[in-house]
Length: 207
Image (cartoon, helix red, strand yellow):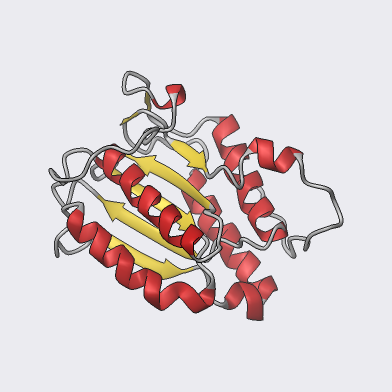
């Protein structure tokens, strides 16, 4: 990762200060994750790719920076193809510094994006350490959000619930613990007009 430089704003602004430490998601962060996931479906940006990267296992010294670099490259790659960047990411410390990322990748772009993801991770220093990277679809396939939306929504709810882990400590994290992309944040949601987009078949909520 030595030959990579930090992109402008890579850490997500003042709310991502390294001196800010947490051991679990706050209620506000959990609410933001839920609302972001629902809004993604309603606006045609369903989060169909679930990526887990254990930076500690891969011996990457700054997982916080590496995550930001990965998302910067992902966003640039998607925008060149006319696709807005839509994601939810949650960082945890239990079992070493790692991140969970829910990402929208149109089903027809999944094979090409998968190749790029592997290449970017190699550049970031993630080698072949077993268990350092896991990527799976939300559902049985990356196209479930199109072909079986009700089943997809159930699987999405399961993944979101796993990310939130309400009431549980998931290890110390310095900086921003959870975030959503600009396309899914509260500013974007505030401009949403009910009825113009698809409804979520199954509600996502803490239970």
